[in-house]
Length: 415
Image (cartoon, rainbow, N blue to C red; front, side, top):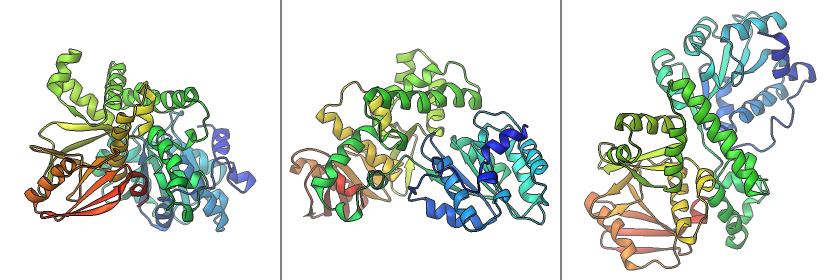
């Protein structure tokens, strides 16, 4: 492990502050929760898609530690994204630069993309158990390698923070819209249209051309995950098929996953397809919803699949027409709620969230027929409330089954 590389990562050892291009001024909504846990003993794990701001939050916390008077030499950052090295080698190189007694001194250790470090779970467990004064903040882009292994090796030693692409509220703050303006449709609606179409990857917000936008999403998000991360972590052949499945789901948000049908279509074993779909899910590229049953979500029947962010739809969809825009609003709603359930019987409900039936009807006029799926759900499951996300209409409509609230999509995203 080259000490020069470590000094390059930790420039605040010399300058006394974090580069403002790394510790950006805009704080995400989840930042305060993460910062509060920095004083806790357990490992803080930041997980989520590439390019959603995990590293930025780490740098922001480092800057906060420096500002509060923590010895800058007691703060270590290292990224495993492009460098193959053991955790022990990193700490040994750090000790050569700054000799520390880990039993006596509080040291904050930030480890970015840790899942790329072979055997990281056992090494992290060893240092965590031996040196109670060490505080580890780790990040990773593949949930399986943060969750599955940590359950076995680091049980009871970590707390997980899930980072998604930007929310609409965060997007507005990025664009310097003030909170007092959020209630005005004429002010917010133009932002809403762009956010629905292009999603929440913060580094794309200032791009002026579709070409730049799509090249960014393709090269820095999709290709890195599909052709680099997943093959390395899951030892698979033919990653191009992952991209094909992701494109299929992205241009058909909410599609039913029929493994038998996909097996015939692509002439591949259904077990292979099931594994590939699961890899996309575990890498945060897609979200799967199961059919709701009272008190649970069953995944035995066909699942519905959505891309994890609308940027993926925009990447692959050649043209977005007005009727398809409604499906993009639906996809946005699914991801905002981190939904896990839909409902299908004689009729269908887009989302069931904490027992609440939610339908997305982004259309000019809501008619009596549009209420029937929610009413059927309310009767069947004895629910007194339902929600309809609309284009313009805002009101409450009472039926014998209960009350259905209508709210425009742009306003609902800010709730």
